[in-house]
Length: 204
Image 1: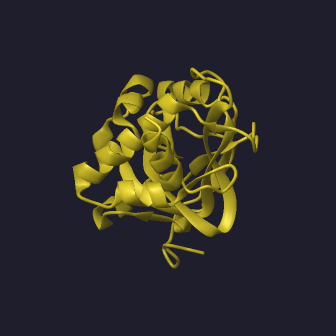
Image 2: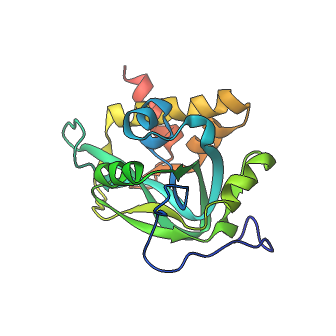
Image 3: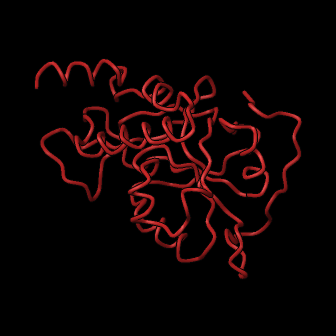
């Protein structure tokens, strides 16, 4: 499935993800806590104004990756994972790296994930003007979980952080980002995120 077939994109050769000049030569799709602007600010120097909300086909968002450094309780140890799936899509934010420092700090927080390169034709911006950001990044990657478990539930604080982040982009650009986030997210056992959140609220 391709959101942007027919468009021409530059390809990067070799292993370098960033240019020595510090200009943007790489980016990642954040689809979990890194959609939250406070988490972005804590982790990266990249400005929120340089980040684009996008949709990406070919991946299914699932709470089935074991957290490595978050506060957990019982079986509530799951953080989000982008599971390759040709029939699915997820939304997130496209974050360009403008410095080696940003890239290194990002790598440090993504323990438990492998970075997979994404074909730019799979990426669609919510706003047409943001298409130029996609075209300016020759190599875009997405973190895919390497600590998958099928009997875990979302880390409560992490889930809240993700939902707050989704609401932020929803309100900032008046786009259905929050609705799309909930609709395209499920638990490891296939339970829709909306069902899980509703049940959790009923037990409060």
